[in-house]
Amino acid sequence: MPISRHLVDIHQHPPRWRRWPETEAIIEALTSDGGSVRFVGGCVRDSLLDIVTEDIDIATDLLPDKVLKQLEKANITAIPTGIEHGTVTAVMGKKHFEITTLRVDTKGHGRHADVAFTLDWQQDAERRDFTFNALYLDPAGHLVDPVGGLADLKAGYVRFIGNARARIREDRLRVLRYFRFYAGFGADNPDKDALQACANSASELGNLSVERVQKELMLLLAAEDPYPALVLMSETGVLEALVGPVDLQKLKRLLSLNIESDAVQRFAVLHKGNQKSLHSMVDKLRFSNKQKERISVMCAGQVTENMSPQDRNIALYQLGPLGFVDQTLMRWVDEGSQYDLTPYLEDAARWTAPVFPVNGGDLLAHGMAEGEALGRLLKQMEARWIASGFKLSKAALIREFLPDA
Image (tube, rainbow, N blue to C red; front, side):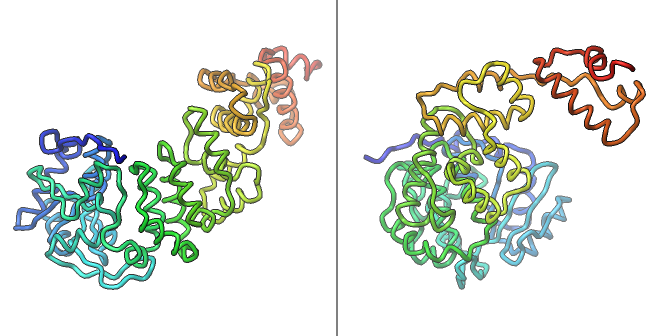
């Protein structure tokens, strides 16, 4: 039975972003010479669900050049970030507003569409992807729902606007967006036509920008429970087309631990047991160097079951709290929920790293010369200090390693 969410009355209870003075300044700038504006998309959808957002999209009937002129006239920084598609970014302090002229798609290419500008709000709504992303809020706080998005949002129903196959042909990234929105807002009631359209397009996803694929995939994995959406992706062939064979049961095990996990950990778990595949996909999807390094540490395996408190402290010192927690979750997924590694996570939560008491200056002061030998000795001293449970003092270490100093 479909759920019926309780939605916020954003006319009576405006979202926080609507009360920003910057928002009022943007509205005033765009409407002072006869323009019309409405907030649209995620900021409206999320506010109805009482989700805090600071990504504000505004639709307007002003042409892009007029938008730039009105903003500059009001001394608001205006950046033509996507002006060929009608988008200008207004910047006020730390607040950014994406302002896009009403438009209609004229020709799809599978990755983006050629657009023409219009004065028709209905046409602008019908070119959007999903019904609840075509909800508008006017400056007076009135909700405008041209394609039935409000009912779908209440029911947790992710529905393409118009024909699903046609919308995907216009932009194949909408396949991933369908599953991402299903993960975030769906209510166990997938649209059969949408699933079939996604399945039909699975073999055509290879031409998508890997950066766009990675962004959508990581947003999906960051959902509270991405598992149902990933199952549907697997059943339609989309998941394997994007990231190759994965282990959904291991991800299900991670989620069943009732321990907070993030998108990077979940991505790694999907490929748990096949590190070659994992590192290949990390390279293919162009993860950042920081993410790559984190995943390498995550899979290194220093954390094992039945570690003593001292061994856990050593691992925490060597890996840092994040690396230690990452490895703990990987180990827990491998060993199964019958192993309770909660004490490991508790150790990490209260961990304060001890400070190695010796530095290069101390050794120079005791007669050592600069060079590789000094670096090697420092590492040996640190290893000894770690083995002592971080207890040996500077004086004790110097006496032990430099007895004649």
